[in-house]
Length: 145
Image (cartoon, rainbow, N blue to C red; front, top):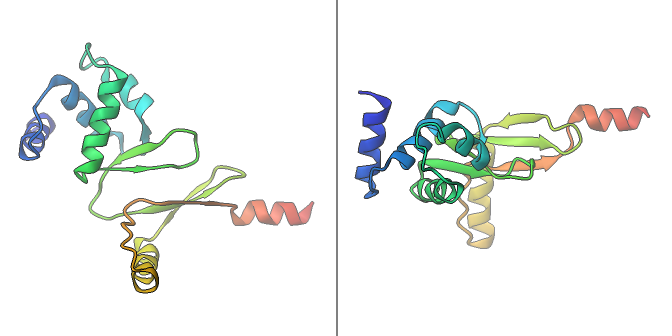
């Protein structure tokens, strides 16, 4: 089955109309293999759908996020990023000094979500978090100065 056929089925199964614009956005997300901003999605998808505009990209990303097909996170670059949701949730430690990103095991935040439920009766949905701080190298560099 082709990516386009799978995308069409995915849209239909979620009660979304199949349009050239939505298919272009899906294609970019599914093949990006990285976090990507809405601006980047638009830049990569506009050749597939000449009538695509940025508001359609944002609207489509929001719909896909709400359906649980795409994760949205703030990695500290000034614009939210989106990623096609993988089978295994992942999270990031983001250094605010050097920008280094380290992938964080989901188990650590799943335990945290359980603790939030126990202590605060708050149901957290840790599907793609970014925790901002400073990495070991940046902290050590400051101490060495």
